[in-house]
Length: 595
Ligand SMILES: Cc1cc2nc3c(=O)[nH]c(=O)nc-3n(C[C@H](O)[C@H](O)[C@H](O)COP(=O)(O)OP(=O)(O)OC[C@H]3O[C@@H](n4cnc5c(N)ncnc54)[C@H](O)[C@@H]3O)c2cc1C
Image (cartoon, rainbow, N blue to C red):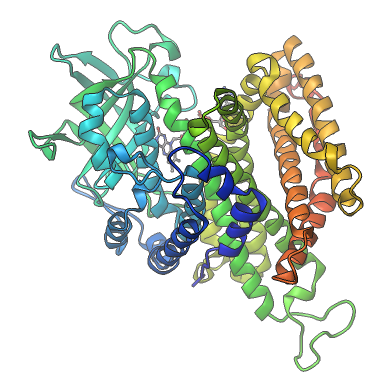
């Protein structure tokens, strides 16, 4: 059975040492109490819960899966108790607004917990994760009356939230959706239609389920601009605001899936159900994007969490398992073979994963820090800058992290050889669980299009330029620092390549839109690798500082992993750039019949 230990030392490094998050956050109004001691205490308590209560459910939960009986979904054994422990501990409300019962702590702390919950169990994490996204959307767009009834229950985790977009014929293309909403004349709406693939659409963990449903009003214009957002509870609130009579919402089936088998994926039917409009009519997709953007980051973190737990278990195995001898001669002559760790190829797999998890963790926490700055900084210009950066990196975090998450779990599975393929060891579950993050919440292909078609062009390129200028401003005063040169030079070349490629893509894409689509996925990978390179140089710089002999092994490993990333992974951008420049013609000239 796999094990998990929350990477508290590395989180400490990123939060306190690399990003100086203590100083940044406690200077923001409302976060004065987020002192280093409080942050460490929260991380330690959360680690205990995830390591001891949630992670042990992950493998049995996968074996048992969710069960569908008479319209009800039963989550695997132990999930109800663990969910109760999670809500009673106040964890769902950590970063939520105190006005709805939240603890008002920074999002940055919640992001670090998000990694842990996903290492412990992605399936479990999805139930509270979606609720958090739904709360965010309702806070931004719902009426005060709806907020007063629903948000305190959702913040406490006694009611959960879902996101109901997908229909059998409408996945990526939401403009095709058919679910109907008709005004009843009393301020409510009659909702009819069927949604598929709804995560947590039915479960036995909460008293009520609050569905956020995209539907079409009778007078709606066709396509994406004719869609509105509705709140449709499974049970209608009674006069006391408790879950009352059943609404016209039922679960028709659950899906049998490759991974995340303890997360229910439901067909949800709305038959004469009562719903309430959220936000303006016909602006539903824009309102839903408040939830989707939060979810996209959370899905990226799934990849990070899974890569971390897979790495930990692969390293444990590579230390114990003995096969063959080191090419330099026996390293452990007392045994008939050396541990797997002596082999360069095994080290390649482990270091590739580690370079992603540590770099990804830094980028994730920095992104969360920018979310906090975008909401709480007193200077509107700085709020806007932080908001731009978050908007820019959201598709990158979602797609890069979920791709690297999957690739990392496969590498770690490979470290176990044949045992990695056997269920008992748990590695094949990590691979299966990691795969979905590349698909849902907008496929990674769609994330790449969001980056190249939207984010690059918004406000005349303001978003990418902000990031490029930030990296440039970091490099400028350090150019004379000899100890940093081996790290800065590859970053400098990479940024130059990315700037040139971006200019090329904007030019070519303005003439032929297929150029953007053809380049998108490779371009996003380059973009992500350059950001990770920036964080690696920053981490190395922090590790090179004088720590007075404390924790030398930790800092040495950090510097060596930085070398590994910059010398062995970052150069991939060269071949990816060649693929981007090969253009759309190679793809589009191929005749349809020839496929
Ligand atoms: C386990 C699971 C849980 C899910 N949870 C939820 C949920 O809670 N709520 C919800 O609403 N949905 C949910 N989904 C649905 C999920 O978000 C969709 O499956 C996903 O967005 C893709 O839609 P699709 O499956 O219809 O694929 P399609 O839209 O048919 O896409 C198929 C392929 O074509 C590509 N493609 C499509 N259109 C374009 C385009 N314009 N340009 C370039 N490429 C394109 C896609 O990238 C993809 O590779 C879930 C799905 C699964 C499997």
